Each structure stands twice: as structure tokens, then as C-alpha cells.
Image 1: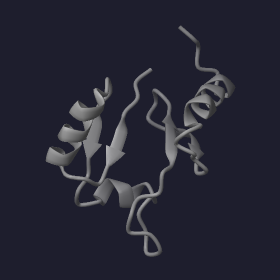
Image 2: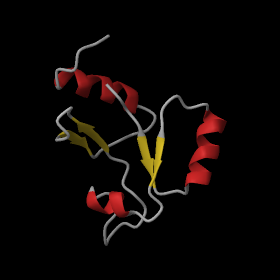
Image 3: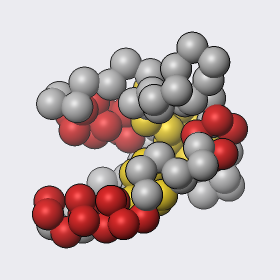
Length: 90
């Protein structure tokens, strides 16, 4: 399994953020918001991206989208969703 985050901030901003937080996963930069728009997280009613979590299968198809994300409690939600999707634990 692989995971990453996507941000509409610049590469420079995301690099600084990742270093400050000592992240062990990549942040993909989308400052033009093209990918964010294609995933529906940026739209006419919201220019700042929605905080949604997308679960994408090995086949590239979206398996599940969590649209109600509470950053402080999201780790448990991710674990539960992965289990429900049948992702094997290591």
C-alpha cells in the first residue's frame, strides 16, 4: 500500500512543510488546482480544497471517498476503512 497527500500549495511550501513535520510520505503539489478540480475537491462553491480522503485500488479505480474528515480523528477512520475494503494488515 502507498499513501500520499495532495496540496494546492507550491512545491517550495510543501517541501518546507514536509521537512518541518518530518513527514515520511510525499506531498504532491497542485498549485494550478487542475488535479484538485478533476477530483471535485475544488469547485465553484469552494476555491480552497475539500479535505477528502480517496482510496484508490491497484487498478487505479476509486474504491471509496471519505468526505467527512476530522484531521484529529482521521487515523482511526482510515484504519477502519482499509479494513472494510479488505486491505490486509502487515
